[in-house]
Every structure is written in structure tokens, then in C-alpha cells.
Length: 299
Image (cartoon, rainbow, N blue to C red; front, side):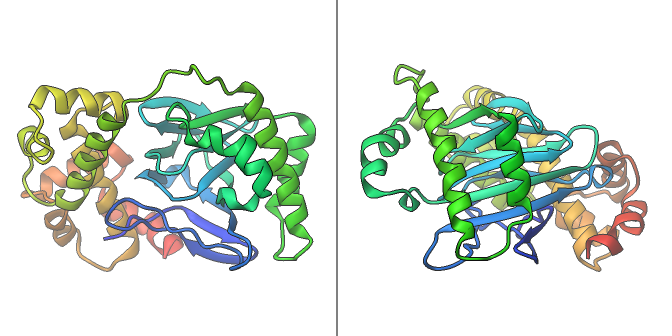
């Protein structure tokens, strides 16, 4: 099934982002002429809203207007609040979840082609082509925060693109100043192997899986498999598997009418009592109580 994301709103239209089997996020551009998607997201902390590992073809800027998110990008873990924004390179695996409270975000997905060809060729594309560039954190100035607040209420109007392009140009100008060519280059083969193992887990999570099964999917030994999961997710392979099972179960509880026992079996638990116990440990209440509290609001 597709992962369920926090509720989104783009130019007054509510929707839910989803990913395909390859963990790719689908962007909804505002128009065919301008490859830009700009939307807000609302995370409910009590419901343990989170976004699992995924990637997208486009670049993405995320700003937190309220609350705080914990981000994980290619193994780097950090907290993001309203004083910074993060620019994520295309095809980078990343995830996020709330820390202590509800969160509101503004996301801008876009392709590099929105920039003038000369600027793109001379300044932006060299940075994007560098294997060292995966993401960038930018400390915001007060006037930039003011601009972001205005973009939160942006309407689908032709002249509105000038405001968006003005802001994106400022962001890239500052990021380019800070970018250094001698930044440590990530191991592309390593990230490819981890990406494939993650895809294997997401495709087979309902089956009994061992560390050996996950490692064998990319012809690695168990120690190397475990090391990569700990590096990129800060979890062991089995802990990640179990958390993904519970995350999937949570979304089924919210968005389907299936019984708790059927959901337990669907996500790979042989004993419903063990499922209920693990769900309570992760989300602070039983599956049925969780459905009664958040199901109606989420549907």
C-alpha cells in the first residue's frame, strides 16, 4: 500500500502525498508551464504523524512555521525549527517526524529548469552535479521568514511566481556561497545498496524477514547490512522493519475499515497480542483506542 503522509494543502486544495513502490514521492505541480509544487503540511504529534524514507525527482525546500521536525537525510540526523530551512537534493532518501508538538511546514518542490539557462549552467548545475551535495541547511534572516509566511498563503496567480522565484534565487545565492567543492563525497555505491535494501524491506515487510534475508537481497554479509542501516537510519535492520510494520499498521487503522486482527496479520504479526503490545509501546495507546481517537479526523 502507499504510505500515508500528513494532510497537505496547495492553493486551497487539500490532498495527501503518496509514494510508489520505489519510494518515489509524486509531486503535483501548480501548472504544466511552471514545474513548482508549493504546499503546507500539518503533522499531528499525538497521532505520531511522520514521513518515512522517500525521495523525489525534484529539489525540495522545507521550512517549519510551527513546531519542530527531526530529519534524517542519508544518515545525517538533525532537528529543524523555524529559524532554518533545508534544501534537499533530488534522489536523496530522507524522512522526518515530530519531536514534542504539532508541526506546520511549507514545502516547495521544483526542478532546476525554473532558473534562467545561463544561471543554471554557470552557477547552479555545477553544485547539483557534485556528488558532495546532498542537502543544505540555511539559517534564515528575519525578512526571509516574512517572505515564507506570505508564501504560506500563496494563491495560484501568475504574478505569484515572481515572489517564488525571487525567494528561490536568494536561497541559492546564499547556499552557493557556502558550498565547498572539497566537502566529503558520499559513497554512491553504498547509498545504492542501502536504497535497494530499504526497498526490499518495504516490499516484503509482511513476510518473516531476518537480517540475512535483507542482506541477501543485495548480496551483502549481515554485518555490513547492519552497519549500513545503523549509519543511514540509526536503527538495526530488524528495528527498522518492525517500526515500518507499525507505521503501515497505523495508516491502515486510520484509513481503512479492516479489523485490528486483520491489520495485525497484514503487517506480519502472527499474534495479535504481540502486535497490540508493540503498537502501544510505539504510539502510547492500543490500536483500537488510536482508531477511535484519530480515525474519524484522519479520514
